[in-house]
Length: 114
Length: 112
Picture 1 (cartoon, rainbow over the protein chains, first blue to last red):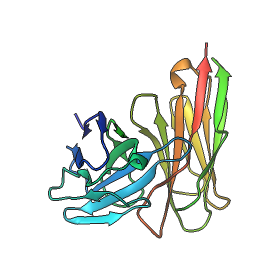
Picture 2: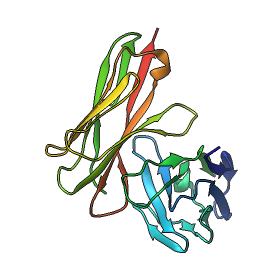
Picture 3: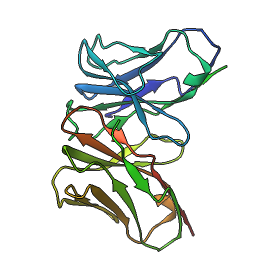
Picture 4: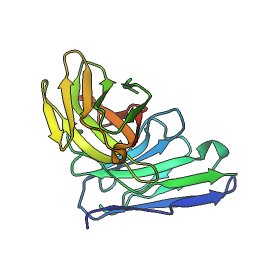
């Protein structure tokens, strides 16, 4: 089944404790991206990747890191989480890097930073 | 960040009613307009990707139109059903970048 697998679904952590949210897609998609969803705001892009070893900042990259060492995986790393990073996170992928291809979303990660 | 506006913010209709929402986006540098349906506790799923002025797309009881010259798209739901209850997101892509800029969504509740 074609899908984007994101883990974990829920995560509670404390300020400063490094964490990684994993994202994997099995559709051989070139483009992968991370978004965060906060109440009253639209989905905001954190980072995106157009292919292996090619990553770039989105609109809200501060406090996050990503890597794309393999085409299928695009983990989101929070080196030193802070309470303002409490949010709902989505990984997404699409066939190509241009905007005419629909996004496939992962199931989301609800992160709470205490 | 490019400004994408959706209206109304929320909508409550009765089963069987037809309804529509609006997505407004910058009319310059248009590349693509996406519609997604997001049910509670699930992830957003693509409904339509529209690229040409005048495009009309249909999927069952849901349809969408696109006007790139004036910068708006309408999403219509004919004969709403309770299972249509969800948040409907639109997203705009300009030809000057790779990002999809999302609106805040329209939350639809359909009651029997």
